[in-house]
Length: 268
View (cartoon, rainbow, N blue to C red):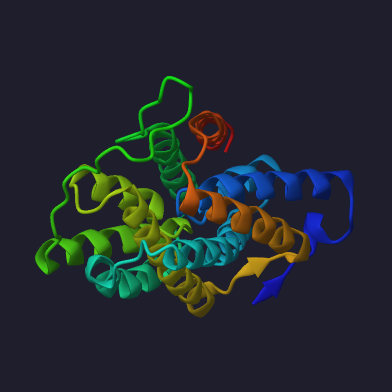
């Protein structure tokens, strides 16, 4: 493991802005059951971090925030082991293999940019959004869409494919799994968020281990970022598990991800 204090070594205005952005990203992603790796990667790219440090830092923050998110959704009764395990059985070893791979810088930038663009789409897309009542509030009692079970023969390849990509890029994979689950009607939004949160934790940990075994991990002083991510993640997870998140804020975050993807494709 390699430690490079970099921008984290002292409390500077740049560090404060970075911590604030990490807090916002953690809050928004945790509200929908995600860890925020794609958002952290976008933020770190704006601050000029190296690709290895971006991936390792994002995975660590991802594990923390997704773990908090999973705990909140689990306590609220939205977790289903039968729904989740078909995906994680294959994803854990696949994410480890993905973490072992060392992509060329240009290939990594392109793959990461595509991941950020997909994440932007996912955040701005709100399937089965609750309708508004005459007083402007959301109708939380509207009927849920009918769901169907997922079989092992489908869950294993879906989980394995997403796990491999997650390990290669440095994300947990929930940003890919959630839309698939919702489009296939395998679960409602709340159960999907709970599944995605656990999926992210195990895949981020597996991918991080693969990176450590293959070529080590590069991180800075994580204390300011861990504190910011923990605060934002806990608040977002609590609100997301008990009420719907803000669609407007999620779309603003999606715009930031698009800008980061543009920077990776044009400037790197």
